[in-house]
Length: 110
Ligand SMILES: [Zn+2]
Image (cartoon, rainbow, N blue to C red; front, side, top):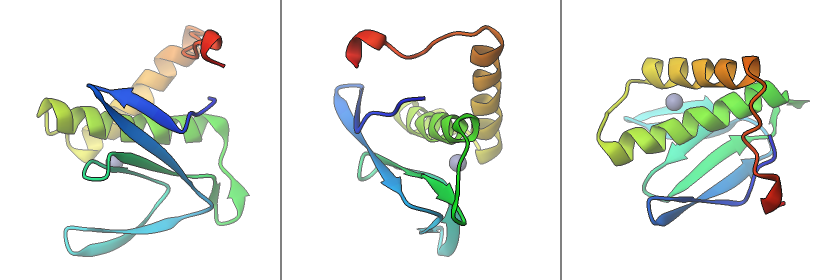
């Protein structure tokens, strides 16, 4: 998937920040290492390029990105999806797109 630096969503913008590798976030008084994070307050998505120095594959990278987008959708819609629900939906959506060879990219935007 080709990523953009910014995405429009419900009249505002979500900035995509690429991280070189695993990064740490604080969540509910707990530090954890992540490959992706949706920061609703900052209207951004953080997405790692590598995992412990190894480039993340396109499938996993796209899955993480969709996962973080679903967190934004969950927050904006008030669905309050759990981590497990977000993870399952992201994976199933990617499988659906992949099995049907759907090209989500709008080539006219490139
Ligand atoms: Zn998550």
